[in-house]
Length: 375
Image (cartoon, rainbow, N blue to C red; front, side, top):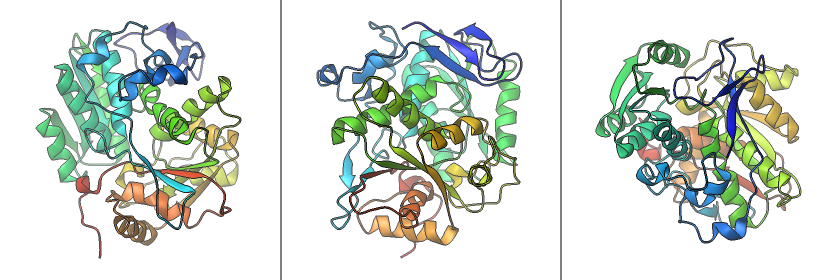
């Protein structure tokens, strides 16, 4: 599959390379590639992982780099959330090798890094992306360094270290963490690769498989997807995946995207409500939903465009609503971390009809969270 990088700001194009992660003008890079030809009948004969979608991923048809990277990610269950809500489904993406949906993006990104000759990777994360990149780097046999906040769940930090990643904890905001990683990425050693789940567009090529699997499991697109959003790695991936299904005429319309933020850190929701094309960075307050505590998401403009293009909306939820939703999900058998619970909290705010088909991601396992579920 022919592909190149293109800057969203100045539209300069670049060959895909191991060293490049942003435009020389400072702009974000997107992937310029041909629309994939999606063949659902062929997916049935592929491996029971996201790699059955290889023809739709940014690799050559006979690519082998993924085979020494995969940990069996993808193909997660889609289940009714409860007997009294038969049209509301949860996609149990915490049933992944590192217990979060970030495995979708990390598997594809590290496979691409290997293809490009990387011998080490650097990542920055609020937790789950760091654990995912650490695991897939370990599987690929390459060194890994992860930058994260010193307030990130100790369980996630321990998980990264267990995968033999070198963990750098930074005192400060999520944006401070990113800056520290990018300073290191600006002086990469030979073979180094900045495996950013925000800046590198290959990560979204992995998370788009979330949409493909929902299509397979429902036989169509749902009416609505409710997705927590901080940096937008799942939201944008889902939008790209459903857009490709639509372009291939496999679905009649993209589902409405309902994006969820914590009230205590909601720059995207504020920009959406005021009709702004992008965000005004805020001083982020603490929230138990650490995965979406992003005060200045770099891809804010794209996230807002995706929600608006699908006729979607933003919902903000309080700390109490998140905690109560987490407890309610546990009583249905789903132990999730607070970021995932935010979507279930939003379901109870979102006005919908009983026949509306809704899908909610359960993004991360509760076993990775710092606290315990309140009884």
